[in-house]
Image (cartoon, rainbow, N blue to C red; front, side):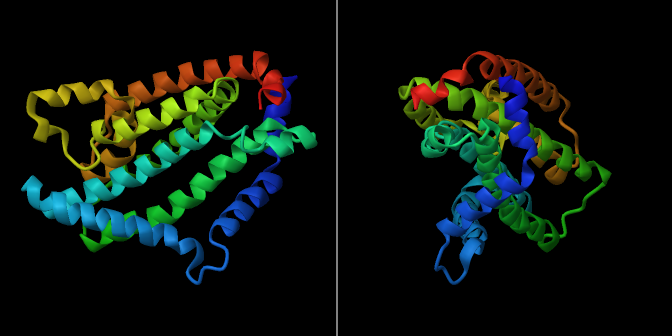
Length: 257
C-alpha cells in the first residue's frame, strides 16, 4: 500500500511541479533578477576558483575551466539532493500531518527544485563549451543518461535519508558534516593525476564516479566504464533500500516528525 501511494504521488506531476515552482518563487521573491541568481552565483563561484586554482594547477586553462565548471555543476545537484533529502519529510511536517498527500509528492517536489537549479547552472556549462570551442562527439549525448541516473539516485536518497533523519535527527547533522568533507575528497577543483599515486583513493569515493559519468564525455570525450559500473551497482542497492524503507518504515513517519 505504501509503495503504491508513494508512486501515485510521484505520478501527480501538476501538483509537485506547482509546489516546487512556488518554492523557487518564494526564494527569489521581489528580486529583480529572480531565479537567474542561480546562474550568476554559480558563475561567480567557478570564475573565482578557476582564476585562483587555475594558476596553481599549471594546466591548460581551457581544459581546467571546463573540468571545474561541469564538475561543480554536478556536485551542486548531488550535494543539494543529499542535504535536502534529510529534511524532505521533516520540512513538510504540516502537510503530512494535515493532509492526505502522498510522501512521493514531497520527494518529487524537492527533487524538482534541484532540477530547476541544475537547468540554470547547465546554461553556464553549455555556454562554456561553446565559448572555448571544445570539440564534442556523439559520446557527449551519454551525458543525458548520466543526468537521468543522477535523478533516479536522488529519489532513493530522499526516501532513505528522509525516513532515517525523521527517526534519528543526529543523522542530518552527520550527513551535512560528511558532505563538507567530501567536497574536498571529490575531484572538483583538482584533477586526479595531480595527486600522483594517491589518486587511486578517489576510486573509492562514489561521488567521483557520479561526476565522471557526466563530465568525462564532455571534457575527455570518453565513456567511463568503471564509473558507470559503480553507479549502476549503487543505484540497484540504493533502490532495494528505498523499497524496504517504503514498505516497512514510512508508515511511522507521521509519528517521527
